[in-house]
Image 1 (tube, rainbow, N blue to C red):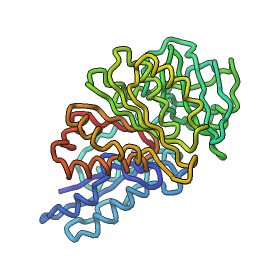
Image 2 (cartoon, rainbow, N blue to C red; image 1 turned 90 degrees about the vertical axis):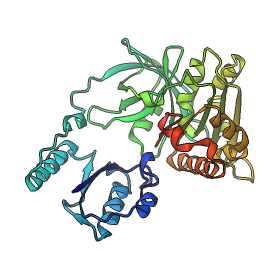
Image 3 (cartoon, rainbow, N blue to C red; image 1 turned 45 degrees about the vertical axis):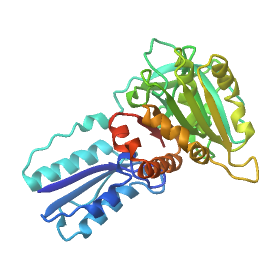
Image 4 (cartoon, one colour; image 1 turned 180 degrees about the vertical axis):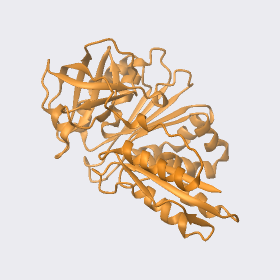
Length: 349
């Protein structure tokens, strides 16, 4: 028998969301039969802990006396011929095992992607924490929603950088943090009104506004608020929405203020809870604000609310840890069912 694992690594060597508890669950499994193990890791070598989670999975598995390494751990690097690496792994697997396997590796290739022009209609100045808003007008018809992704190309040869879209008044609004060595964020920060940028829209159906939900809880930090600004604008039926957001200081909020005020006036957001990590002596992150509202959030989830999380992976993991703790205290939350029924939606990085 064979066990084949394909896994990505996110953030600072983090597991994908659906693999957060992989090692915990592995410890509880009694595996009496021998398995041949092969692990393929996906990542980008521009990150310091590239493929770290995949490596950990492989080394942990082959420590088990009933799990035998079959093929060496294989790293697929987005920056260096990922399609070729996949094809080579597939050939090696088929030659050694004698079993046919089909992988649509052409899906990795971006050479056939048709880039489109988007015109800059507005760019806000950089605020104190190096974040800004940029608004874009598609130059051709595009069908997209808030929560979809815009893949921006800083040059003809540059890799695409993804940004979560807010659709507001038929424009694409992005929230961007300029990084010191960030090629794409620096490129966008230097754009001016009427400039054209090249990009493509990638549909992200797993993170669209859930129009059938009785209530929505939105949790974001930093630039992760962007898709939620668009979803609030999309909330024409005034579904109850509680927004939790965390930033560094009051100025961090300033570039989003007009959008939140407009949504509040139109009753498109019921409550918003703001936390600052560097405004006062007391450090408060958005997950702390979420914890303060444990009773309300627990009640909402039991009654069918959807919780959406966008922003950093570390924040996401802390919020999910809170939900797991609350579920142990109150099994009525039925966390596993929330995942299965898509009541917990995440888009973190």
